[in-house]
Amino acid sequence: MAESGGIFLRAKHRTFSGLDEDAERHWTGPFCFIQAADPQFGLMKAWRDGDCDGGGDEWAEEVELTKQAVDAVNQLRPRPRFMVLCGDLVHAMPDTPFREGQERDLKAALEGTDPSIPLVFVSGNHDLGNTPTPSTVEQYCSAWGDDYFSFWVGGVLCLVLNSQLYYDASACPQLKEAQETWLEEQLSKATSSTETKPKHILVFQHIPLYLKSPDEEDNYFNLQRGVRLNLLDKFKKAGVKVVFSGHYHRNAGGCHDDLDMVVSSAIGCQLGEDTHGVRVVVVTANNVIHRYHSLEQLSKHGMDEDLRKLLQA
Ligand SMILES: [Zn+2]
Image 1: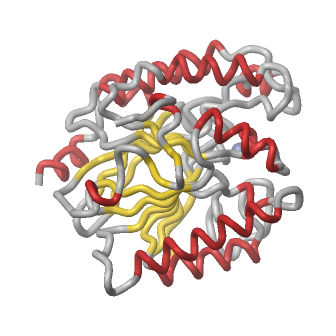
Image 2: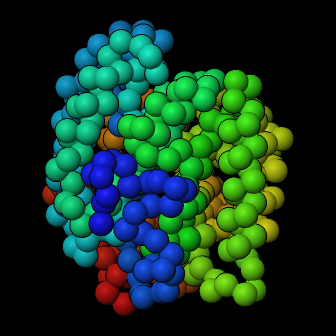
């Protein structure tokens, strides 16, 4: 159960209250979860106004979209084991106007989530600042819980990373180092022969490793090549199956050498041709199958029939 801090502060001490190893390390059959990204309260109007560097002074549309997502997710059967929001929870950067109001209204919209569906939060560049500092990281953690942690669900190991520490840790090098040490420990434990092996290992972060190909050039929406190849190497050696991300506001990604890089479009502002939506992920003994659903589709019809059938198997 959630300890003090309620549904928003369950990630503490680098783990997640209610989804811990003791209770969840064994495989109990197929299950589903929801992956969403970039509610980014405030961006829709800011984007229309051509003022993305401003904090976004209105977010009524994002409130409605988030509530629509919550209602649709609550209706799913079987129920998702959790819903993860892969960063850029709000648009206003730390210590800027509108930040407080956006965070308050996002929490109010998420409060309606069925209590049996834990909310897992991932930090994005807007949540921490493009160049995070110990202070902005601390602010994020006091509002949304730890910036990196691991949890177990139904025999699957999930690692949540702070991708901003890979993007630019110039103002907080010790935090970057601490996350790297922690990640090494997590991956080596997951592959250790003395421990129960996870059925799958999944990673959640805000910035994608790549949008289309591991070899692509650096751009605003991916992690720099050196960092990217290093992480890919570590992930592949440990047998990570899927890396889920957001940040791009479009669906993208691709599978290379058995590692599936998933880039999901946004609950909030769309920068491409996709619709507001979330991704339904079905985990089976051998596979992790995922598909983006528009909010309208999910509200009206639930998850696609073929995915639902996999859960009955
Ligand atoms: Zn972002």
